[in-house]
Length: 122
Image (cartoon, rainbow, N blue to C red; front, side, top):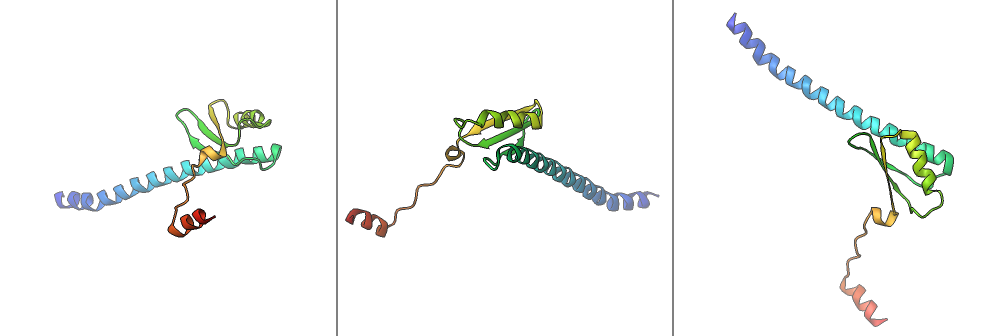
């Protein structure tokens, strides 16, 4: 009897651990798919109304969603885009409008000897 219980524990424990890991992977994949679906929904709503003016990125926030719109906040349609995003995702959305040049900092170009010599000779 004890040998049977020991064999079940030895064989059952790895199987149970594998099932738990597979469930965790499934949960992560479902959450990622939900983010992708929401991002497509927001992008389609913006493109339907304004055309392809911005491609928002979406993340989960504490109590809802966080949307980053890489566009200049001084554009005339920026407020309407933010309103459309809030309507699409509901009241628990955080919207950040950032300038495209501030969203992705650029690295300065590397200076090599030929480039510096040509600049100095000009």
